[in-house]
Image (cartoon, rainbow, N blue to C red; front, side, top):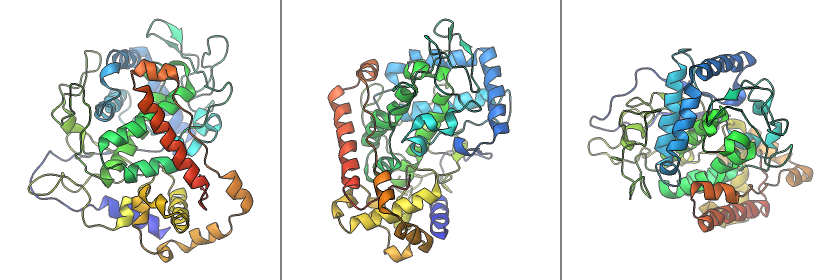
Length: 421
């Protein structure tokens, strides 16, 4: 796995830029994969959440999200708002436990049958709701009564009965990270895809404007933020275009806030780079902060300059072993269908196949026909009419994004590519 270790190190050891910029964080918190947490760590998260519930903080975040809903969805504001929103939740949590950090839920690891995820067990987030009101009975928020909007049980209602319709495979996210040149396009693919799929899959409170009632919300948006950070490390770190809260998006835009959750007038520019200003966190499966703030002095805003092309081949998956197989198998698929390269330009830029770890080659050679059939990619579930209407999305645009995703699934399934996930 030396190739993967080198990739992470190269991406983390980004070239310094000249000039001065925002102050670098002195202390960093690391957001870990929820799949890696121990039972004791889940219990500690549960204790913090119980205290935040008793203090009314969870109600406050749910109320703020509902009030700000229209201004923080369907535009580029989606990314900086949720980055700041989750961090603010963490900061409140640390008043009860200084070590509290929101883990991220890499839902691509569970996309085929989400209901079987270890994140949805009785010792973690709990499973499906029960009874006529679909009340959550188990997990770290089991049997909770929420105070907003009005007293009600925390509800969970899977969108396919006792199962959940497929979410978005890692390969699609990998393609978006590598091929979407502008944040406006990346935001559409993420918000109309993996973002909505997980909200709708869990259902209940998770599929409402007050979704922060369910702690899944913060884990899910931590992952969405991780994907944005990967995209930033592949393209222009300070790219911020497309529709904003009021007209064209600008880094000078004030991030939407209200009296329930105030950001002190923070602007989008203040949260663009992890490890600077007050954005003092990083991810265990993504590059760390750059050595110096990008765009200072005469240096262009692009974060990555003159490094190995392999460092641009970021994947939507947090599992390095799966990522290695994804790269190697994708390159093999290129030999029969070169048109796939435009969807995965980062992978296409990697050197000859002999540079790939030999253990991965052996694993591929041992792949059987049975595995090929079993590992066909699944179509992601489309957004529901209710979800599209609630957000005020353009239904035709959302539909086109989904059709494009299914076309890429078809292209991969019709090639020699075999998903490792």
